[in-house]
Amino acid sequence: MTTPILLTPGPLTTSLQTKQAMLVDWGSWDQTFNQLTASVCQDITQIANGQDTHVCIPLQGSGTFAVEAALGTLVCPRGKVLVPNNGAYCQRIVRILDYLKRPVVVLDHREDEPANPERIEAALAADATITHVALVHCETGTGILNPLQEIAQRVAHHGRHLIVDAMSSFAALPIDLTNTPIDALIAASGKCLEGVPGMGFVITRKDRMEAASGNCHSLALDLHEQWAYMLKTGQWRFTPPTHVVAALRSALDQFLAEGGTAARGARYLRNCTTLVEGMRELGLRTFLPDAMQAPIIVTFHAPDHPAFEFATLYQGVRDRGFILYPGKLTQIETFRVGCIGAIGAQEVSRAVDAIAQTLHEMGIHLQSSLSNRV
Image 1 (cartoon, rainbow, N blue to C red):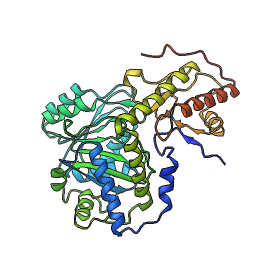
Image 2: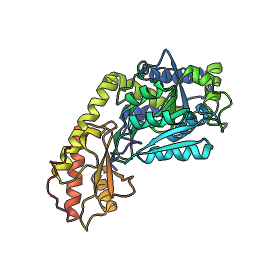
Image 3: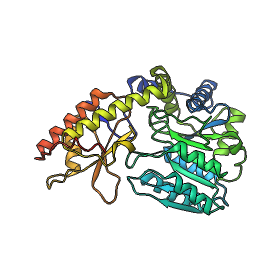
Image 4: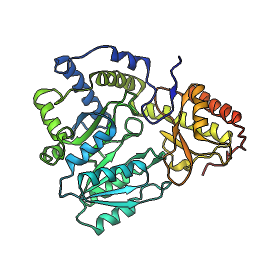
């Protein structure tokens, strides 16, 4: 059986070298594995240029585990969080804060509207009790890119703390902690680093972590305790995802050999351009205008045709070797196609052909939408 190519925002298609790294078993307290973990954390911190001010704390679980751990550890029970909301993963942050019983202010935006720095600044000026802003850098529900640098500068100007969900942007889009004031940057192994899922991580200011003792609602998700234990022993507090860490070490080696964030982002951009141009030739329309689109995942309007069903499209494309992603919008029928993973423009072109063939089988014939380039 041929393994399908994942056109999703994670898990994603990994290289053979990354897969092979998981063929070795590791002792969780063994010095060699501890050194492996330390090297992974060191390289992750350096990718964001945070080695002088920040520390990387790994955590078992998906990216959402790391988001909850960061919010629960860094926002004290008396804190109050502003969440610019323009998509599903912003809404997930709001749900987490509700579970944590941390007061939250939701600043709603349209799903096709980037988070507005001026509105964020106005909200901070109007409410001195807001202590933190929690921002999703690339909202994977649509593929929209929020203006991180400008928002970070305005949050810092008002003396508040910024927590950034960079799940779908870290290692593909430049983030420099030397000139972007961020308290915590959150991502995971199975995204743009092209590892396998199972490990989240938080790159956080060391002074903020030192001050976070006793904040967390959870034993397992307490980042301060995880950091302090690792600092003292070099070990994870609880059983680590050893094979995931080993795969991530291999993936990081490949990331660095490729040329780091600039090279990876350029490959993803080529993938995105190939995808969007090919889909528009088929008559499919992007949800976002090009100026707002991050080269991570693209949301497409479902064809306005009575024969269209996503399940049929999904199965036909899967039979041809590719896995798509359903839409995440509530008001409009859409589907999503990822641009990330160990793939290039050639695989993306083949995926477009698979979509074209499946639509033809469904009896759906559309006119080119190449004018959809706002």
